[in-house]
Length: 406
Image 1 (cartoon, one colour):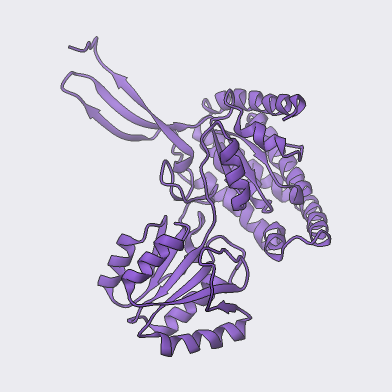
Image 2 (spheres, rainbow, N blue to C red; image 1 turned 180 degrees about the vertical axis):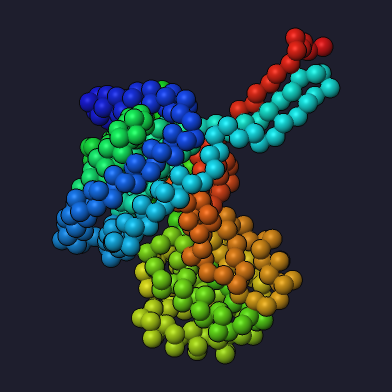
C-alpha cells in the first residue's frame, strides 16, 4: 500500500471524524431538513446523473460486464425515483439516536439508561449499484454517522455525479458537508487503507460480491458487517397450494433475478414432485428460466434466470439442505399446514424466513426502513436488512446522588 493512498484515506477519515462530531449536535429536525435538501438536489441533478450513468452502462457493456452486473449498474428512471423517494421516507422515520432502549434502577441507588448512539464514521465499499450511494448517505446522516463511500470503477461517473448532488444538498442545508465523503481513486489499495484506518473509521460495510467481502475481511483491522451472498431457497411442501407456489416462485426468480433476495434453489416434497415438477418445468420454459436438476453446485448464486431444483423427503430434509447449502440470507416455505410452517421457520437458520411469501420481500423498503445499507448474514450486531437502528450502537448512562459502591 502506497504512502500516498494511505495519506489520502487518512485525510478523508480525519475530515469525516470531525464531521461526525458536528453531526452529534444536530437536532432531528435539522437532519430531516437536510435529507429533504439532498432529495431536492438529486432531483435537480437528474439529467446530469442520468447522463453519467448512461456512460457507465455503455462502458460496462463494451468491457463485457456480466448482464446481472449491468442490470445492477443501470439507474433507470423508476430506480432513480425510488432512490429519491427513499430519502424522503428516511426523513419521515423516527430518529433512533438518543432513544432509551431501557432504563433501570438498582438497589445501590444508581439509575442506568441504555441509549442508542451513532457509531461515528462508517466506511462503505460497494459495487455496481449507484443508488447505494444515495441510500447509504441518507441512512448514515439520519443516524448522525459520517460515511466514507467507495464505489466500483464500473460506476465511477455515476457515483461522482451523485456525490456532487448529495454534498450540494448538505451545503444548502448548512449541514456538515464532510459527513459524506467519496473516495475518488480506484486503486485497490484504497479499500485496504479504509479497512485498516483504525484511527478514524469505526466499522466497514461491504456491498458487493463474495470476493470483495472476503478480501475486505482478510485485510481489515476494524469490524466488518458482512453479506456474503444470497443463495435463497423456496421449499414447496406436500400441503402447498400449487398456484400460490408457482406465483411465489415466479416473483422470486423473475421479477429481478440479479437481486440478492432472488430465489436460487427450489426444493419440492417427494410426494408432490410427480405433479409439481412438470408444472415448474412448463413455467420455466415459458419464462426462459433454466432449471438445473442434476449434478448441482448447491451453493451457487446464479443472479440470472437459472435455478437449482431438488427433491426432498420431508420438511426436515429441506431444513437440513438449506442450513447446509444456503447463505443464511432468506428462505421460504409454501404450505397450508401451520404446524409444518412453524417447524420450518423455527429451525431454518437464516436472517429472514418466509411462509407463503416471496423471498423478494427481504428489503429495507419493504420492511418499512425507508432504505437499507445492506442485508447482513452475520449474527453479531445486525442480521437481515440493516436500517436506521442497525446503524447505531449504544452506551450506558449512569446517574446517582453521590452514590458509591459498597
